[in-house]
Length: 456
Image (cartoon, rainbow, N blue to C red; front, side, top):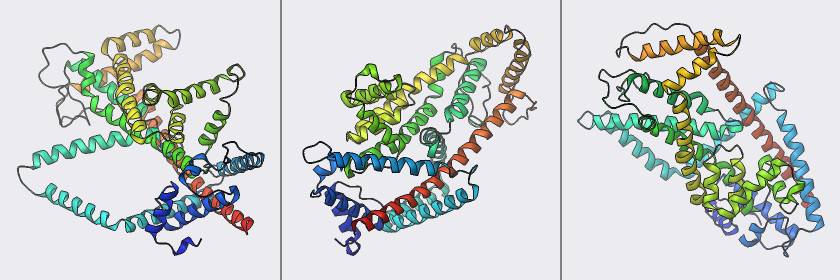
């Protein structure tokens, strides 16, 4: 069938009929339909959502034939070799190729965005008019400016922490550990200030850019719950960002299940390998496989509460839970709702409480005293820590707008350099990831050409 003569609306209708993804460029939608046509011609099936969900490697009886199994292993091996080839495309090993592919991938992304904006030009027009109206309202003088400025400040503050949460979770190849770099130090600084000032009523401005003790102290004793309430918004928004960052593995697995095609993704192939181990004797499996199988069974059998349990604890294998939910077509709001509650409410309160208890004034003093008891290295390390804490306490008591003498401290110097190194590493990983994504486009195009020649 010549899909090139179809309109975009007709292509979307045909894709929806087959249970395939209906977004993307016109040529991408055409390629998607052609690939499914070839798949069903090879398996003598009629395209339909029921067969699509079963997948290309299953026969009508539901069991894979030897030929299908052999083809599946060949495809997986080909994907593995291509991934090994793409892994060599880095700034360290192939800088010129990496930068060229990075620029080409950025161009492809830009063209794709422009095309999607043009296809949705009515929505873009309405959104633009709404934005212009909000800008006019923002710059218009009046009594409403008090509320506008407050809303602007809160919106920017929330988006800042949501963005850091997304970066920590998705990361385009590697996550930026924004909890250790930003949220954790922020909670620690608020905790130290709260116990030093005996208040959380920090004036705004300059807080949160700079914390200054209020002129009047609270008559009530400072408690952990006061600090938790003070940093609740930042922690919740950061947790919500990490929940949003867990969506790509879910959508990838769901699209793979509906289309019947196995994506060229190492995490998804690991998930399929785990599925193959389910019938084995647990005593013959290593510890890592048993843990992964346990997470997969928990999510599959318990559903919402299983996802909630996996999201509520520090879990480096949560991508596996997302892939499992996508593969078994768990509804979006079931997955995202449980992930949001687990990460933004339960896990964040656990992490928050740990940081606050650690940096409470009496605990910090106890840790510094304990540091001094370490033989040989303890006393030299204890003095800079005490000096740093004293300077931080002194800064809390200066008046807003008053200049503070910034002394040099090797702790702050090391922390600043650590942040710079991690940010640079994160940027390099993004460049490598986008370059490898363009290389994957070339591999997919080459494979499509070979399949087309083989079909002829």
